[in-house]
Image (tube, rainbow, N blue to C red):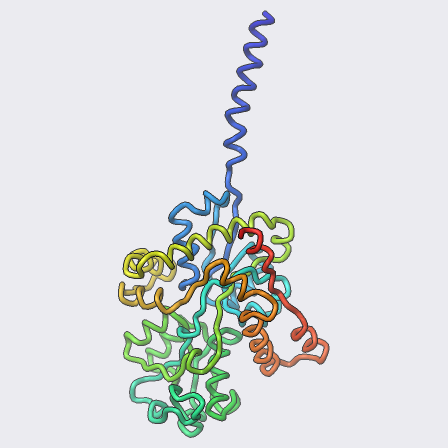
Length: 348
């Protein structure tokens, strides 16, 4: 009798020991928010390889049309991490609830303003000698009807382009519109110019539209950032670190593999995320035109006085010039920093 009870007890203990590792190994669900573009491919590719599970996570990825929409959705969706441009990460109302935890890529060459091939804007180039590759003049651009996504990297580019030409937003007609419907509307004949980011820029070029300015030619840096929900990151720093480990594996893959080898996956990703077609050639171009950075490079960029802080300060100046802020709000914007390099430092 005693032997039978001991045998049963041992069986229960053995089963508990077998189940314990499985319970411990259950990956933590991590919600994230993204757009259908380059930085998202890195996370998508890493998930396809199972690297989220290897990092102890089950990454879920929610799609959005713009970084502005991502940040504004924080209260509703309570996501943990996201990828978005630096402009919405700093300037939208909920940006105070974010940490900037890493740099996804540099998309300075991939924000651009497009016109039709018969546009008079193409008739002038380098009217400002400091920007020889920028098209347009005060005369040809004034009163133009421009489609743009407000409070985004494309908006930042648009404002810079107008300034280079000696104009302001008051000198043109602006129609606020998300990039995907904006490109469709522009294709249908609406507007004189449209501000876009990649991969929509490749679609614009395939339709015969011409770029008159991009961020690189306008002298501004456009970084896509990885951000974290502050509340979540403070409560679960180990999950944020695990996410960064997974994401950095994706970056390492992009740096190590030829773009042509990744193009098939990129085309599949783009179709899955946007429902739109991307040619292998466009995929290669998009991969090659988005620099990504190693862990050591990112830590240097995120350091006090580094290139990230410089770019963010310039965006703060842009935001102040395009908003109605009290002196107290301006002091807060200039003095605050959301950069939290400690999560990357922890995985070095």
